Length: 445
Image (cartoon, rainbow, N blue to C red):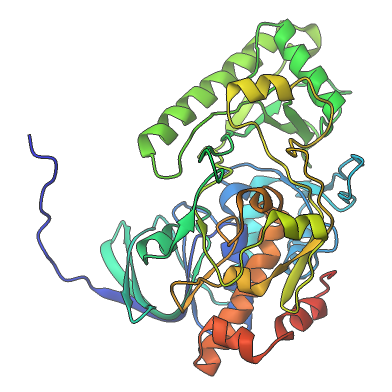
């Protein structure tokens, strides 16, 4: 049996040319595309699913963390959601750290889809749904084209600038950019979680956003026969008064580049969710509980971290680092979920909010240089694939930070395209300009 087959060479149609291509239409990619389009360049946004929002919508994340001091596009989204009853202010309780959760919120995922498309349409962003980036052409450290596959077949898109907002760093990988994955010694990654929307919970049920409440919920499920794989499960109410999002499972050792592993993890997670809700219906107060929806894909907390002109480190978090090219201020502490079942069992007995590995973080800034590839001159990153170490990533990866990352990357990419320079050159020639721009948009720095 042959281990490989040879695919015949064939020419690809160049279906579109834009100033900027953004790969991934999640919180970071959407924000990058919107920010760039409003800055005066043409934008093509490539999205694997059939809606914008990524983990927000198709992943049913439902809860926005680290929204404090984040204005700009995030505020626009909030205002649009409020107009259609798709927003609920859901502050995170104080947890004894420097985290400020007073501005955190939940949303309706269907309303979010509508709002994001409305904003994208208003900015004339060209969207390619059901499209996967499968290759990139690079010449002299510059991407010239990305290759996508969709219902129209395989084709190429040309651009001057590119932003990887795929979460897993797919575009950077195809372009030959260097990257890191997982723990620096063991290579282990944080677990994956499949989010579900449920109904029929007790009327007085409160959110479980802190240690004691999470442990109590785990014990409730255990008492009815479900020893949940996530020992500190999350229940959070949504704007619709009879719906809540639940995070009940952990799938371990799920690699971003192992499709069979991701598939199996998804199947196992969905089975666990349905069995857990079925079992808890034995409790009279939960007798009407039902699974309304599970996410289209399992949420991966980790993928590739593409190397940038600056790599955020755990020491930056510990020292509350500040930068002349700062784009936002992060308050979330190091939030490490257990990487295996043994650690999960131990962590479930703790009452603190974060699995923080004993690390204490101060509010710190993300520099624009962490969004610029060190290997491909016209490639930027936004979202959880930006440049940082394992511990820093466990803090900045939440979507309240993905939006300003995308917003800043889009602005920098647009300015670079207009000035006919690369993002690294733009930041070098205009120190502080991106910080001033983000401040003018209302970001607390």
